[in-house]
Image 1: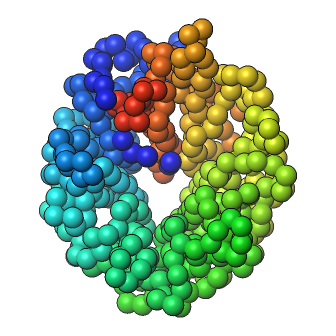
Image 2: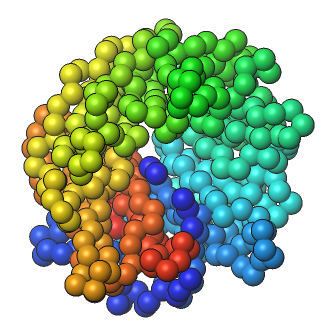
Length: 450
């Protein structure tokens, strides 16, 4: 799922006309809607889906700030199960960071994380049919910049952050939620002091309330000497770090995901390729397998893991000096090796413009995926025009042409985009736009298949 960041938004009626579905047979996808109906600059957007149409989104409205500083207001919007629209935005507090993270877990437990004005990270909790519970501040680790929230089974949850403390160096810190009390622990470093920490980390639930954390070591593209380490932890103990065998120098991210049994899959983004490693919940990671060809240029890849343990890893392929000529994918089962790469059939590629460009992927039941695309081209005046597309696809089948929105105004392009899915198959695609004259987003839009 995929920076979260001027000009004012146009009215929502105009947005529906400009960004509505390009075809009449939109299926179950809603029309496009703006996140905020008033004219506002937005940043820090995050969203997630539960069952029966339940959804939560959070964002930050920037305020007037001094140079080099940031101040904004955090807002949250909720769509209750069975309701057609999101309710009015709720003000959560003042923040010093243009960042939020929303996560909805099994049973609908919802966590929203943001940094308070005092620099400490805060967590707000709610359930689908109730209101917001008291907000908790996480003590310590104020140097964490963008924490990752994950929810496990039976009320367990974890928040992961890279803590760049000038005094002690970088560490991987975690706060765990006690299912009985509903409270998170203080931040605790889970990386060993003798092992230097690189730029990437990820976390996923394992079996029986435990968690697995992975992180990269520092490395450079030239030396290629990096590796990925991992630990298991729960509320009482942390294991010594292990090494993912065969892992390389991570320069394009780590993504650890788990199925409902705690089996895990790890995408490793190298400078010139992508690796995939898998493990069953009671065993170690297998050898990291490089799934990309050495001569190809690739993106960092998109991993999606379904609840029943079907993992699909998709990436683009381009020859040196050429545009993308294919999207390839591999599938894997818990503890096994990835299958040989295959092409996704049916995408429009290798053209001068208006190609299908995959931006994000998220799992649906029974191994299907929700995919988010963009398509762009230049007008006669050399201004960019962009559409946002969505598709539902299953490995081994030919993809139907993505359902695209109408293009927005010339000169406006997509800054961020993501797709979120629920356990029962709902999907929500969101994106932000900006002009070519500014790096600040104008605002965020969304459409859903509920």
